[in-house]
Image 1 (cartoon, rainbow, N blue to C red):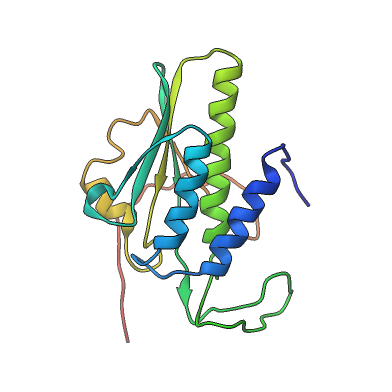
Image 2 (image 1 turned 90 degrees about the vertical axis):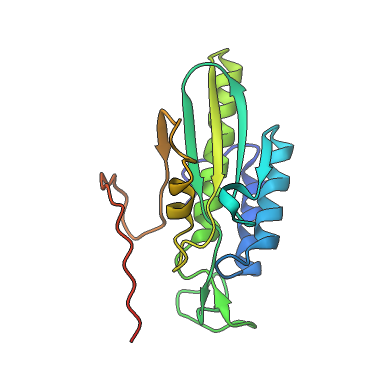
Length: 183
């Protein structure tokens, strides 16, 4: 069921499907990044690629004055989770990688939210800047951690992110922890 629909919805569904099909692993999301950047440029955002010294990290900004609101998006896949879309049970697709955590939705949904807020501010002549962050390598690569270390989020007045899941709710969690264990 679609909860939000605009004239832009079909283009963003196409973007999400493209990122799903690309299923690129951490720090190798070159084509997924390119697809997101193309969409942001069409929306009028000024894009800065390769931020924080990470080739697949980027930021895109639009607007003037007012508060600075950040939207965080992801697009990396997981190894070994190749699956066909549109099914209720897992059926492996061609290729080893897949969007087991829904980052094809996460990045595209955050991008659509950024574009919608941009349009709202413009239509209502409200000052404000919108910044979209392309955050790579969230599945075992800690992309946001390296971006934060470089001060990428320091000037934000608010940051918005989300994650696909089996419930709807708001989480208020603060964490700088990053722990991995390999057995």
